Image (cartoon, rainbow, N blue to C red; front, side, top):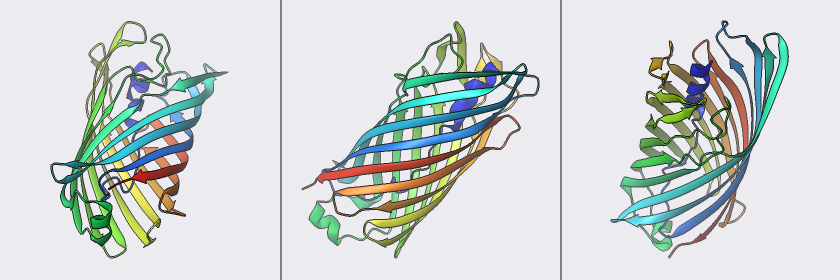
Length: 293
């Protein structure tokens, strides 16, 4: 059971279209969002836990800024989540449940568009039509979320996670085709379930998005992702199975003005193994933009 919960970090992937979008230098974004997640947890039959379910409410805040990085468009993002969750099921045939509330692990991401996205002012940006963009990024998850080592279920992971990314976007008229590959490298958690030592193999993931822009400020997208790997080891004892999952999402974005934007998304994740997590997630987000030369 410890090995199973150690591997649930593999399912913390997100599907975020337009992450490599060309932006004018100096533009800032402040964002807030709400996500409702519900799902089923499938455990090994040898574990006396049945009909396990989770229901989580998350509110997140974030900030992003577009930068001039040696003549290329750079971007820095910061995200901080706060969650309230409830897990329930049958433990040895008897109903059992637990609740958690508090901060999750914040994330910091720095990205640079290497090709097809020069650093530009808002005036230059308005006249520029990007074709193909190639970008790279690194995202770091900080071990600052709520964590108590004697508990099996926590909102924080008590370990660093480093995630390098490489993305390509090709624009054709009002269509954009986006592909991102990434790897998750997990640090050690030396306070896992008291005094245990948790290690985890890297998770490798690939996601793709097809985006259609009806007009500036109005767009829809369909997304899909697949991840595999992340075999956990507790006290150097490996799990029998790797973690694998498939995700898909649909998103709708609307901006009533140049400074305000809304996004509504539906995401669904399914494990590719007999043991894992199946979940659905609804997301509503708002962003305010300001600045730029």
